[in-house]
Length: 94
Figure (cartoon, rainbow, N blue to C red):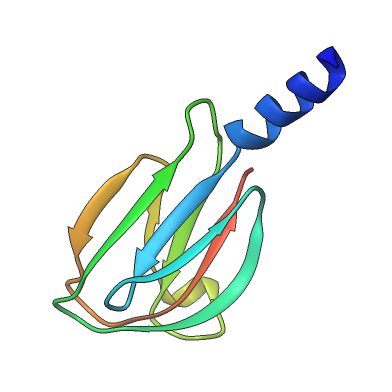
């Protein structure tokens, strides 16, 4: 039973949630590959990760998540209003 409890706590510790595009929710417990979104300038979005998580989010102006088009990066929790269109994201470092 102890092993199950430790495993459950470890999984919960790496959880993250990204709310975008008028309330759409993406969440997970580990890295996430490039995901296409349609988040318009002026819309609010938020990033939240569990306590002790090392996950970070990368935001892109293109839907292919091209490094040259990275427009945002954060590991800390936040809620913001987009200053430009965001068309892709990925989660790293989990």
